[in-house]
Each structure stands twice: as structure tokens, then as C-alpha cells.
Amino acid sequence: MTIIIYIVLFVIAIVLQLTVAPLFAIEGIAPDLVLLVVVFVAMKRGKVWGIAAGFVAGLAYDFFGTAFLGVSSLANSVAAFLAGLLGGPQFEEKPAEMIGLLATSVFIHHLIYFTIIRIGSFYSFGQLLVRVILPQSFYTLVFVAIFYSILPKSSVSHGSGYSKR
Amino acid sequence: MRFAEWFITGRDFVALLIAVVLSLVLILTNEGRQTQMLRAWTFGGFGILLEQMSSFTRYRNLQEENRWLSQRSADLMLQNSELYEALVENQRLRELLAFKNESGQELVPAKVIGRNENSLIHSVFLAAGEEDGLQKDMAVVTSQGLVGKIYAVSKNQATAQLLLDRNFRVGVIVQRSRVNGVVKWLDSGNVILSEVAKRSDVRIGDRVVTSGLSTIFPGGLEVGYIARLDDADPGMFIEIALQPSVDFSKLEEVFVVKTRPGSVDF
Image 1: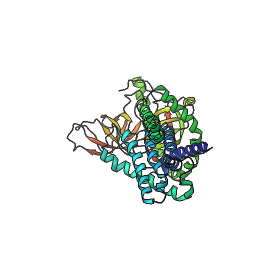
Image 2 (image 1 turned 135 degrees about the horizontal axis):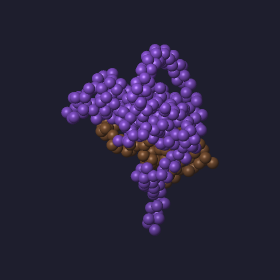
Image 3 (image 1 turned 90 degrees about the vertical axis):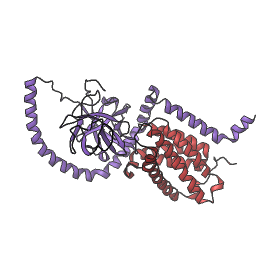
Image 4 (image 1 turned 30 degrees about the horizontal axis):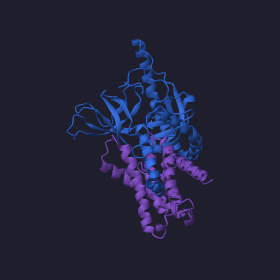
């Protein structure tokens, strides 16, 4: 049942990413709603679930673009691994660390994704970082923050599927 | 035994490793036929959802589009009279020179039902596919000019790669001076006219159209206007910023050119 809910969540996220997210784009920078759900699953269910969800959702999303197939899968999987750490009990009472790790996972996602699809373009890495990766990370993080401020706290804390150690 | 223990305790890392390896394999085997089939299959699955969702988002631009269309219709009325004169003259000259009439382009209308855009990737999803006669690499246009080309096709949907995409190239000429060049991506939302030598006759405001030296794009499709010239670069070529004719932020309906030009691509 849980898997079906997550699949529905991802389908909604991909459809919204392709139809609604462009309406929020500023200078070509749009929030990454698929990553938002990947982070949610990773925090809720742990790293393994997050990686699996990130890989499959990334693959589905890659089918719609003109970028290399597998780029979003790679970026989402790594971001989910990092975000999965957030679901652990060690972060429950440490909001600063939690935000820091969340920002890192979003940044790492965009760093991997854009570095790969930049190959062969005029952009230097510095330009890519300043013009694309940092603004995109910030914008996505704003949406992630809004999303989590709306959700009740219990829905984000680690669930039964989370690997306890 | 130790490996088995590590496999159980380190299952997070194992999962990450598997995902990374699979992703890298996919990245390195992108142009395979199976990959193209998977793309087509996924379009089919999501196409209906995208089509329904796009009808909601389209209302946002309707009022602005209406104003723009009224203005455009007035402009076109004025242009129409000038073009009619040119058409009459053109027909007379063609008959005289026994030129083959090249105006018979077959166009397929297609609604834009979704977008995949970031700073480097620019593509749109169209509610038309193989059943409408669409094929990979067909040119996509609007009344404003060249939009892009078909990148992937499924039964009822297709993806079009836009002129703004970083992997897009098109051979063009400056209409006034017949100088040849290639339009390609510069950075987010901007394109340049490249491969133009420094002493070439190009001016700001010159209209740039497709050259026709391609199996994808028919000649004479408007691509844009020269917006800025910069010859400060020590190389052989001048850097020319191009303002695309099409307003990509307002793409809602496009046409796919079914007729392919017969010449050889370069």
C-alpha cells in the first residue's frame, strides 16, 4: 500500500514538474519538485527506500528530457542517501544540522545533474556554479522548506520502514 | 562471512552503489534502440495526465495572449497587403524561370502539454505523435518562426527539442547579405550566430532564416534577429547574439513540418 502511495506521489510530482513548475521559473530556474518528493521519502523511510525511489523517479523523469538517460537517477540516488540521514533519530532535535544536511543534499543533486549535462557546453564550471547550480539549489530549497513547514511534524519523522541502528 | 555481515550492516551503501552503477551504465548507453523505445513507452503513460494538466495551466496566459493576438492581427493585416504584392511578383518570376514550387509544406498542428526546462535543457511535450505522422527530427515551427525539432515520438505524444536547448544546432543565413552561420546555445535562454567571419556583412537588426542546407529544416524559416555584435574576441569569428523570433515562454500551439527538404545535411 505504501509503495502505491509513493508511486502516486511521484507521478503527481513529475506531472506538476512538467506543467506547473515552469510557471514558477525565474530566468530559467525552476524548483525541482521530483527531488522534493525524493527527499521526503528518504527522510520518512530511510536511505534504502530513498535511493530506490530516487533512482526510479529520476529514470522516469529523464525520459521526458533531452539530457542523458540516467543523470537524474544518479543525482537523485545520491541526494536521497544524504537526505536519508535526516530521518535518523540523531537529527530530530537539531534543526540547524537538519537544514544544513538538507541544503547539502539539494546542492549535491544539482551539482551532479548539471555538471554532467554541461559536458561539451560553453559554460565553465564557475559559471555553471554561480548561474545555475546555486540559484537552482536555493530555489528548490525554498520549496522544500515551504513543503515541510506545511506538513505535520509526525509525517516527516522516521517511520516504521526506517533502518534503526 | 565478513562480507555477508558488511552487506547486511552496510546495505545503505550497497543500495547507493547499485544505483550509481546502474545510472552510469544508462548514461553510457543512451542512444540504444531499447532506450528510445522506453522513452516512447513512458510518453504514452504520462501523456494523458500531462494533457489534462496543461489545460488548467493554459488559462493563466489566455488574457495576455488575447491582447497579443489582437495586436498581431493588426500587424498581420498590414503585412498581408505587402506580402500579397510580393507573392504576385514571386509567382510571375517563378513561372518565368520555371522554378519548382516549394511552398507545399504539410503542417501538423500540435498542442504543447508540458515542458522540461532548466538552464541547459529546453524541451516541450506535444499532444501529437506517430499516429499524426510525426517522426524524429521533423522541424517544429509557429507563425513567429522556428521553434525546434522533434526529439522523440510515441504513439500520441512527442518531445520537441527547442532552439534554446544546449544541444540544438541549425544552419542559417542572414537574409539581407546571405552570410552563412550556425545558430547554437550560448547560455540560459540565449543563442548565438556562430561560424561567421569577422569581415562578414552583418548588422544589428538583420533577419536570420534557416539556410535550407539540411535534411531537417526547410529553407527560409525565420529564426531570429541579430541583437548584438562583438568582434573583440581575437579569433577569426565575430560573436553575434541572436534574439529568437519565437517567444518560448508563451508556446501553446506549434506546427510540425511533415515535408522534409531533399538536400543533404551538413
